[in-house]
Length: 420
Ligand code: SAH
Ligand code: SF4
Image (cartoon, rainbow, N blue to C red; front, top):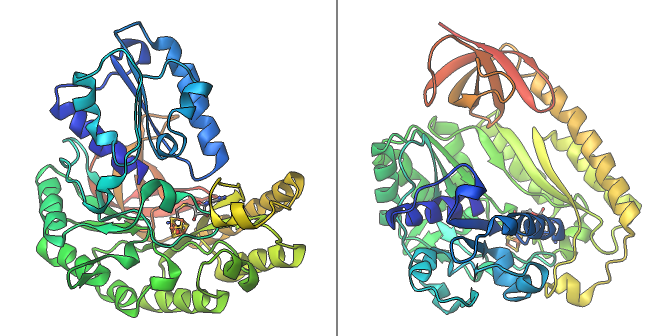
């Protein structure tokens, strides 16, 4: 979501005459779009802002903190990093070009969310990109006990499907090959009588986009109609991100996730029936308040049973104002959280490696998005399952979709050879 917002803000800045530069020392405006989902993410953003403030030349460079942390902390950010010129929350960041034009010499803090029920429209992303993020919903109504997102992003707003289709068509005209439909919970998309499966059908049939993905799905709202699309629609890429959070039903209940592990497993089985080689990824939290060793083991068991392709794994981080913060003690010691996290990461790494070995010999359709960081003669791309694959080839393939046979794999990367 933040990447999508950053893209839209770039477009808004470019539309106002700005261009991007490589070095902070050359910049007239430095913008950090922030995340507040965990304390670590905020600490990193504050560190980065402190670092960048030294590039500020009086009255010549503006340093801006925008997005979720700006929404949550407001002018408290100035106590940590004095000298910031703009602090703009999740509903205000797109106003930046206008606000710069009106700037006086005081720091400007704006975290108003009163417009939160309307869905502001922004220009689609700039040219020269073959991958596009298209926001379909903003905000979240779920209030999982640990999560700050509903507080900093407000309630759900769903975009008109006509606008979404129009935007995708515009992106296709600009050369975009793959789109990712973005929302905190895409499964709850509903605009007039169009729900998420209906929207996806429109995207698949009423646009010329070649590859379609979406993120994120909440297991409680994952419908049969959505799963069925995976058996018929080849433009729908074979990857599903389905956050589990915990393998223990008691912890899931306390997190207010509103599903059990059995329900979750049933959804996964049905997805695998619809698209047998679908790549599955997830989010997991360890050390949620009161999680005992046995309940943590249930998460490990779930990971062993489901065999995810990869996972984002976190230790619980208290977020001020959430239900868990107000009602539960953060009672799992940091060293226990860290030990659990390490154990989980080690297990998932092993599983990712095993799962990736099964890719060997398969031909994957790869969208080439650049070259390897270490070796510019090696092309890098993503498979349908969203796995990174590297292969060498003596021609310019940037932005093309090519067939690549997988030859080797480790936990993170596939290596292959292009066919033909
Ligand atoms: N809307 C998405 C997730 C958004 S946040 C969903 O519901 O799946 C991304 C991930 O961050 C979450 O899935 C969760 O695993 C993690 N997360 C959120 N709040 C957290 C917290 N307080 N501590 C640790 N991890 C957290
Ligand atoms: Fe946070 Fe839950 Fe909403 Fe996801 S569904 S953004 S975890 S409150």
